[in-house]
Image 1 (tube, rainbow, N blue to C red):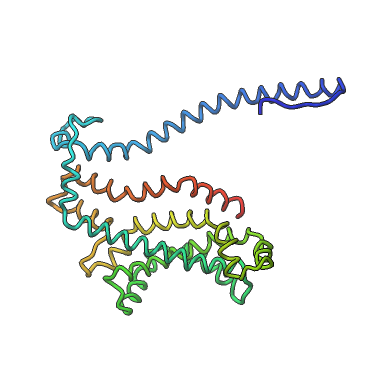
Image 2 (image 1 turned 60 degrees about the vertical axis):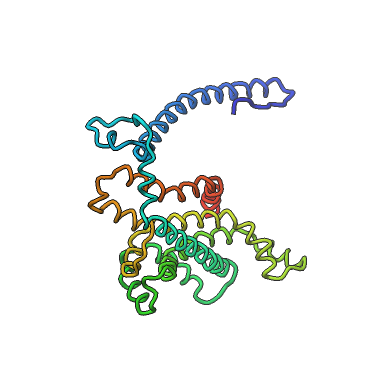
Length: 305
């Protein structure tokens, strides 16, 4: 704030207002210096965080001569796409990527539908055991995934759902649904119930009020939870490696892990980096596309509690 609009006819009040303006201008000048300092620190931190990503990308374009050179260079002597050709020639890469997409989309869609409806129930309706249900959702998020992995596998095996993509989707709902319920509940609670009542007075049914009032106002929260659920499901390795261990199916994370540990591919750093970049690309694009929506959803959730 650099200017202050002072409207008064009294000289004494006008004179009293002037020093306040000078004080604020001086304070603003000092904060500019600190802003440069913090910007410099931020740029340095961003460079340190972004350098591994830069190195991964540039490695995919290096030739074998550059990769095995004793003196690593920050720029390839000549650009080569052989690493990407090696990855796409691998017959297991595209099926693994397809399996990952099926599992991720299925877990995100089912998690949002079930979690959103449960969040509406605990936020809008008063029923016996509601507080216990809310606390349970919070406690489940605190339980480490490894602690429930064996019981989860036993249950899925008894149901005949191991070695199937649908079984992995159901397993992912164990940690997706509690997160969605707990996050969306805070959004829905802060939507005034009077809006639902006004919509029903205007002729809407309960489902009409849900689709016309609650759903649009909860959209930032849905996008935020959807993006984070997508990231969790896409990058998850432990559950999928356990559930699909005997079915001959792989996801992209499992494929990348075994590809990097294969003796014939272990020293092919260019192909490993190309595979890692291709596997990470959908998550990066998802975050870039919905960056503003995710920021808005996180801010709204923080303010509304």
